[in-house]
Length: 78
Image 1 (cartoon, helix red, strand yellow):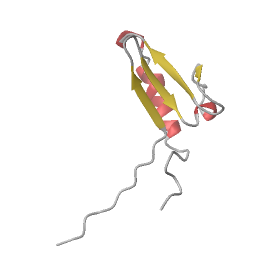
Image 2 (cartoon, helix red, strand yellow):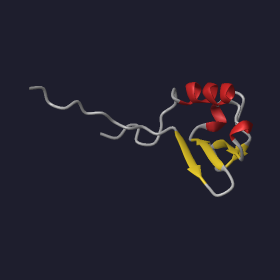
Image 3 (spheres, helix red, strand yellow):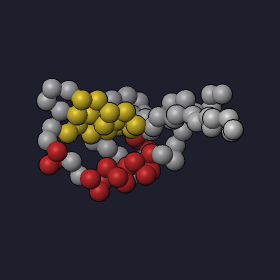
Image 4 (cartoon, one colour):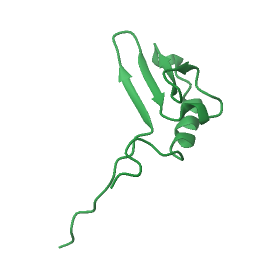
């Protein structure tokens, strides 16, 4: 029997749901091209989505692919 494989979760994106919108925030959002419009900190940027129809899936997918290249929360921890 093999030992369970250990995995490490590294977070580079944060999502939050609110009564009137959802917030998608990238930890290194200022490094993305184009930079997401909503600034929530020195390096973080994201988008606020009020309706599903407002979501640009192609752009969001592009940001996700870019964002996974940068270290996230938990990176470097052992």
